[in-house]
Image (cartoon, rainbow, N blue to C red; front, side, top):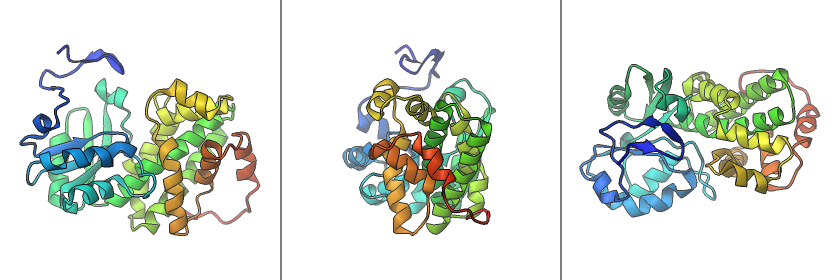
Amino acid sequence: EEHLNSVYHPEITLPAKLHATTDASKALAGASIVVLALPSQVLRANLKIWKDELAPGSVLVSLMKGIEFGTSLRMSEVIAEVTAVEPGRIAVISGPNLAGEIARRQPTATTVACADEASALALQEACTTDYFRPYWTTDVVGTEIGGAVKNVIALANGIAVGMGLGENSQASLMTRGLAEMARLGVALGADPLTFQGLAGVGDLVATCQSPLSRNRSFGENLGRGLTVEQTIEVTKQTCEGYKSCQPILDLAKLHDVEMPITEQVVAVLHHGQSPKMMASAFMSRDTKRESALN
């Protein structure tokens, strides 16, 4: 009624045309575009409840940047599996899009991905404003892998920040993290150029460097000495990297892809390893030739 989000952005008045409801049938009735922005691990359960309310021919747009635990499915794959909607009606939006900055209408760009070019172009047009600039692609796989893996790398970067490590360490983590992202994406059929764009390096830089990033903040608390349980308690918001790191690593192992940073994050978050062991684990690895995907 007051057009305010009192929890996250109480200082920002929401558009008058925006209406909130907890009634899925009311929200979805006649909607030609349905935007899904839930924590990734609860998408399947909610879609099972809502799927019969979807209007015929509607396009489903995922803003989620995670991988499902237990199945290692990308969010578009979960949507397709639950709703039986064809790929040309499932799209993904991902990029350096920190919610607080967008809410303040600070200029940013993003990637709109859909297997159907016409749908991608239509969504691009629908999302374009004087402060939000979408670029389109048909590489759904690369766009989703970029968004999911960067959360894990940002978490690792946050640990480095919390431990007091400097710019050299952070730049090294981000660069090698980008290589992990690209290796996994290419193994799954993504276009390697996607990772040089907004859904890859763009999102990675924003999430690793911004104090607004929940994944970086989660890592910082660990790096400062808080336990995983204490960090979850003080964070209170969804940290996709925490939930997605294990299914991402499972996916990598399934496709024989090496992801040492992700492996260390999993060890810290889920197997009790001290964050202080991460740096020595990286630095003691065998040296090798550098290449974009090596």
